[in-house]
Image (tube, rainbow, N blue to C red; front, side):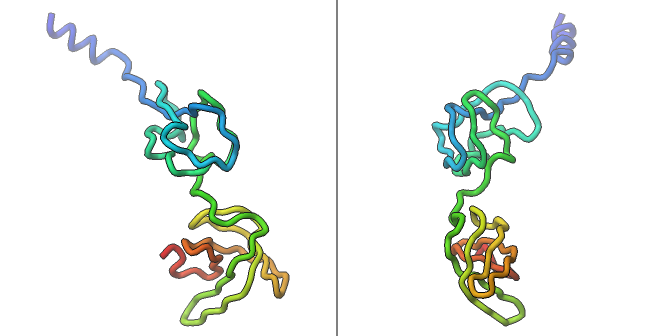
Length: 143
């Protein structure tokens, strides 16, 4: 009899893993807190499985109550807003050039955005550092 129970347990489908779903409808640019997510039974690729994966991140799109939270729909909290004036820094091989730039997108630390040099009107791609500056040739951006 014990052998049959073991065989039945092995033949049973595996229990579904938990996924994180939105506890309420939230607009884009919402910073997620512990009360904004809840666990639901299911399994989907690319969907958060624990609250630790999503709490403290910002939604890039609207999240709807009861729907799974995809990791691709989240990102670090934005510290730079569109049209914000910020330092634009080139820092490579001992050469440091700093000027003023205008952010053309919203971004969080470590994200790449387009920045317009306000002096030359040229647009460059830069990484946002923890200090809120845009680094063009970044060697030590996130420090």
